[in-house]
Amino acid sequence: MVKAMQQLSSGLPDDRLTPPHAAGRLWRQTFVGLCLGACLSTTTGLALGDATVTTLNGGAVGAEILKSVGLFGTSDLGSGVTLKLGVLVDQGSLASGADTLSLNGAKLAVAQIKAAGGPDIQLIVETTKSTDDRTVTHALDDLAAVGAPVVLTGGVGDTPQMLDGLARNTMLGLDGEGRVSSASRGKDLLWTLRAQQPDDDFSGAVQYLATFTPSIKKVSLVYRDKGATANDATLASFAEALKFEGMTLASAGLVPLTGSDYSVILGRLKLAQPDAVFVDETGADLNQFIHQFRVAQPGLTLIGGDYPPGAGRGATGDFENYVFATDWFDAAHPGNNWAALFVRTYQTAYGQPPETFAANAYEDTFAIWALLRHLTAKGKALKTGLDLQSELVANHGLKSLYGGDGAELDDIQLDTKAHRVVERTFGVFRVNGGKVSQLARFDLGGANFELLP
Image (cartoon, rainbow, N blue to C red; front, top):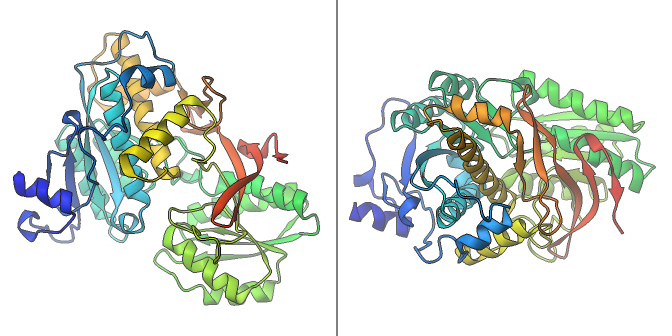
């Protein structure tokens, strides 16, 4: 145990602490016992941060946490209840930082929920590998073996192994990264609490292009290959958004799952001669694409659906004047008191402002607390993910960090049949001088689109 804690603190691998791998099984598992304010044990070298007991909740006190989420004076908060919460992270995403941020957001939420008088939530982290779907199967089975009824699935997406594993283990899966495709809408036990990426970004992005630059008529799409069914759905969504604004599809370029050489796609873009390009990439892949795009297509209008952690942070570079449209968390301008508390405490805990992945995992962990409170208020015990799903159907309005004004919080409204978000705050943003400014706002489906002064 001591060696494991030392390893976790240093982030250095130690083969003596790594369990034997079964054939083809590339996974790492880390138990994070935040109920005591510190990591209890690990079997790998996954670095989870050095937050101490005093900084784990960002310096927040219980009363201000409860007040910020509208629970001040509530008596039944789940104190004394223990809940095991699984978190799936992808090995590649950990390297790029996205899933590390998600994990940090969940850790902060767990610590604050405990400080507010809520349940002891124990994070159980399972690391998967995007090139080996068997790791998802093993991860979900391992979580079930230790009694976790719910898992944050954002690090994986809606693979067949994910859907089968949730059903087999009657485990509720909550996606906070928008990786659930339209092809998996309504699948039992899998819910997405973020807008679907990139499909739900298209309408606002295209409206912005049509409003800001009316001369744009032909737009190309560059998007990541997620399988034939998901690809067809994404392309159909993009074509529909273009048609609504009187535009046409110039070309569509699929990027292989593990690809980072865009020379072929960029060559085809030159032949298609679009007026603008929408790119569906994230993380290091988006960095690579934009760098190659700026060289091959200087001056061509580019808009994306993400602004990943660590991208374009300098005053010059490839991301200068990059425009993106999505439900992005703007830490520099939190809209409500809960968001302001989150930004301040995350900065205290981790020494940097939060990004979208951290915000969503934090928000989703609080959503799980809300579902647990609804369940226990009825005198019911939590046995499987089906119990939490029943409460999600009955109480499908969840408080959000996004939008709102002061003490007034917006809700994440969910479609209980499609298991997806039907109400969410979006924006169009531009990177300038390493800083982000908001250009427009819109609601799901492009409703209420408005350019900002």
